[in-house]
Amino acid sequence: MENYKSDYYNPETFEKSEIETKIPSDLVTGVQQSLDKIEGYRVTPVFINPENLSVVFGVMDKSSKLKYKVLIIPND
Figure 1 (cartoon, rainbow, N blue to C red):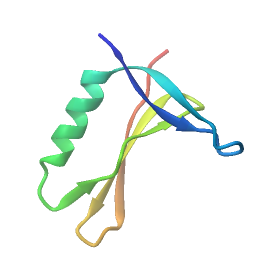
Figure 2: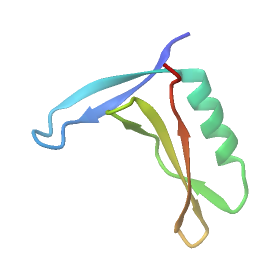
Figure 3: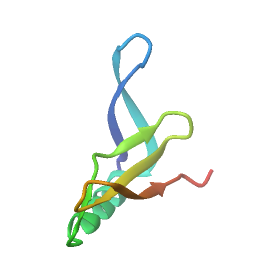
């Protein structure tokens, strides 16, 4: 299985690089697709926390307020 990867922009230099998590891509994709199917909510783009390589989704309601965070954190 391939691990989930995403572009990362350094907040100080704005240099672009690729960041890789220890989380399988199919798990991230499956969770995102499942969340997208729930009526009345929208899912934000996936964010990778560079400090612990966790994957974060935001879930917003119809008024575009962030209501929930869904985290996938590797168990090292």
